[in-house]
Amino acid sequence: MSNNKTIKSALISVFSKDGLEPIVKQLDAQGVTIYSTGGTEKFIKDLGINVVPVEDVTSYPSILGGRVKTLHPKVFGGILNRQNNESDVAELAEYQIPQIDLVIVDLYPFEKTVASGASNQDIIEKIDIGGISLIRAAAKNYADVVCVASVNDYAEFLELLKSKNGDTSEADRKLFAAKAFNVSSHYDSAIFNYFNSNHDIASLKISETSGKVLRYGENPHQKGFFFGDFEAMFTKLHGKELSYNNLLDVDAAVTLMNEFKGEAPTFAILKHNNACGLAQRETLHQAYVDALAGDPVSAFGGILISNTEIDKATAEEIHGLFCEVVIAPSFSNDALEILKGKKNRILLIQNDIELPKTTVRSCLNGVLVQDRDNITDALSDLSEATNNKPSKSELEDLIFASKICKHTKSNTIVLAKNKQLCASGTGQTSRVDALNQAIHKAQSFNFDLKGSVMASDAFFPFPDCVEIADKAGVTAVIQPGGSIKDQLSIDYCNENNVAMVFTGTRHFKH
Image (cartoon, rainbow, N blue to C red; front, top):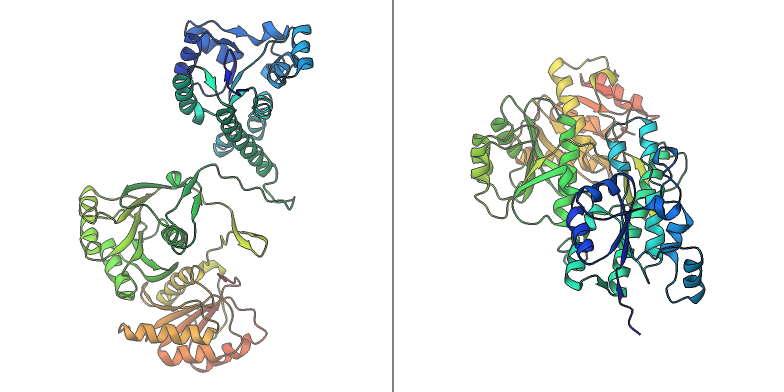
């Protein structure tokens, strides 16, 4: 027995009418009876196409200001009946319930309403009731009914309608049912997350409907996917497809550069999620040159990011470097023409959107969720721990180094001077190792560390780090403080004329 069905009747109740007109015209041309409500009904009538008001079926008007229109047994009976069930068919006849073969719904835009900053009352009114119920009913009964649950599926359905002249297979209907439950589950997750914005309920609902298959994961033998709205965050101007590792590095670059938003021209070069070069200068060109000087070896194949428009002079410098990705708020036309000279180089304009307030990562047989580290150490947060007070320029460098340190893998030490990253020790198992790595690296690139500053992502349990730093030329230190042995480090600094400030905030990054 064939499972093919012919669409003879349709219920259409949508928020978005974009792309609906050709569907309605195609249904009408195929002799389909169309039922509708409210604004959708008027839209269809205005096209000069016959439409049966749902009120004529239910003998009930739309009530409660439109909150109740389709919630009626004569509507849901027409959707949920099993066409191969004699009892169901008999009841349709007994209660004069019309058979419905197709349901087209587009839900109230709940997420867009939340994102717009609307009032709570307006947001609550955008929780769709009738539409979500129609979707669930039609998708559940995919054996007999086609469910089109989003404006995003209109085009695909229209193609199906034309190519098969109104006939659908069970596989067609099951695919659209899966799409429908994707819509409904995402919608309910968004509503729950709005109500649970303070995380009073320890429940995790993550729903991303925009997925992209990547060439592979971290390594070629691993599958990789990205779920999220990349296009909302970036405008891609040029280059190859982004890889899994590119995306991780881009994330690190964006979160780091957010610390310097609205400040003087700042340029950063990242490799494996860590900054290998960063400088802030009066011109972006000089910021790039000095960022590159931080580690011209690691910069090869790196991710570049700027906090201001990339101009021609900067682009000419960048063009001489092999790099994977360049990110900026904008590019001048001349800069764009130069940077497009390498066909695989990825050029991204970063759009101004808010990042999620929480971070999520897999752990054991579950996931870890935490608030994003949104604290940026500022001058007002600092307490002076030593008798020797940092100078104005040292304070500026200390805050500069602290921002970089926050976004570098723990254990980390950052050395900076004149708003330039001299070197960092990244991901070490010992803070002393991190410091020695940073000193060795800085010296290998001919940095004079005399008068430099040091930032640490966590406190010093012993005075060894401040002693090593002092002997390397460091004159000021920024760290969270809070060790029971803080006084040992303070005493060393006091005895050796090193300034040290506490932030009171640890910035581990594992």
